[in-house]
Length: 305
Ligand SMILES: *[C@@H]1O[C@H](CO)[C@@H](O)[C@H](O)[C@H]1NC(C)=O
Ligand SMILES: *[C@@H]1O[C@H](CO)[C@@H](O)[C@H](O)[C@H]1NC(C)=O
Ligand SMILES: *[C@@H]1O[C@H](CO)[C@@H](O)[C@H](O)[C@H]1NC(C)=O
Ligand SMILES: *[C@@H]1O[C@H](CO)[C@@H](O)[C@H](O)[C@H]1NC(C)=O
Ligand SMILES: *[C@@H]1O[C@H](CO)[C@@H](O)[C@H](O)[C@H]1NC(C)=O
Ligand SMILES: *[C@@H]1O[C@H](CO)[C@@H](O)[C@H](O)[C@H]1NC(C)=O
Ligand SMILES: *[C@@H]1O[C@H](CO)[C@@H](O)[C@H](O)[C@H]1NC(C)=O
Image 1 (cartoon, rainbow, N blue to C red):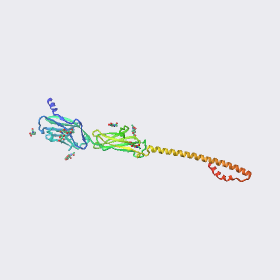
Image 2 (image 1 turned 45 degrees about the horizontal axis):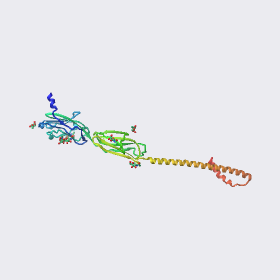
Image 3 (image 1 turned 60 degrees about the vertical axis):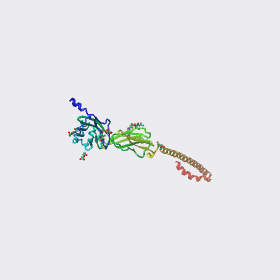
Image 4 (image 1 turned 90 degrees about the vertical axis):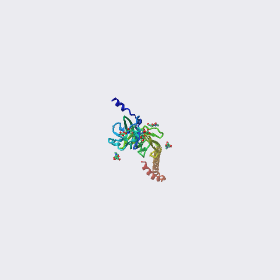
């Protein structure tokens, strides 16, 4: 058994140490190479690719042919070795039409008299759509209102980082809620909601950073007077005008009251004079010109109560 365990470790395999990144729906080569000192017969080479975790069969090759009867169904028609490269120690696997579910660890086994194995990590990446920012509510906004800015990007993988920034590029750390939803292909729609208290003339931008692909894009909204029904200046002018009008009305009312009071008092005085004259007249029996004024006096007395 000692000699057996020695032969097991003899064949050295080379696989990428860093994770291999494959774009969704594209093809990828999972490199696996071996160096064998002695010349060997190709029909003696066996290659076996397997999912490390589940040990499902990805691709098997031996006795000069692919042996695919026990291949996992989801890899059917999507895998290929390069038989003419085997003699050069190249046991790499071509995986076509990569999907998110392909992500994971793959182990490459090779036997040429001696036997060796090595595992590599496959990561899948998909670029997101350009982010789009929408505003809710969209109109009749007033300064001080709370608005929700929603940034959406879809069809990407893996989960990205969403960063909200203001016009001068400062990170906003306010009320941000980011959610991720996967479609049946495993691709993500990322939705990030930033809640802000509205200030006129402010810009909010949403940046999306894919950890595998880097920055993918950004979108922004600028909230100007157009979105806002009453920008502060207009609001204060309106309030100012309203106050002026009110003061004017009060002043007018006061003046009117005084005028009415004055005319009432005058009327009362005149009435008293008229009475005196009447009394005098009845004493002297002489007619008096003031008497004609008794008519308007009666009218105004009614008003004064
Ligand atoms: C696979 O190997 C070839 C040749 O050594 C190299 O050019 C290529 O970059 C490798 N691919 C990966 C994903 O490591
Ligand atoms: C193996 O062969 C394939 C097909 O020629 C090539 O694309 C790949 O880079 C080779 N890998 C290595 C490690 O040489
Ligand atoms: C390789 O193996 C085949 C079948 O076993 C045999 O016919 C052939 O002669 C061998 N070739 C070499 C170079 O050993
Ligand atoms: C693989 O290809 C064969 C022949 O083209 C076809 O009959 C089979 O349905 C394919 N399998 C899958 C899973 O696509
Ligand atoms: C904003 O946050 C991102 C990620 O957290 C960081 O890379 C960047 O340097 C920050 N920018 C500023 C201006 O703080
Ligand atoms: C964020 O906004 C939601 C809804 O407006 C609110 O319920 C929550 O308290 C806020 N959180 C913070 C930290 O402001
Ligand atoms: C809005 O902001 C821009 C740039 O920050 C500035 O040029 C412009 O004068 C501002 N407008 C108002 C009405 O404050």
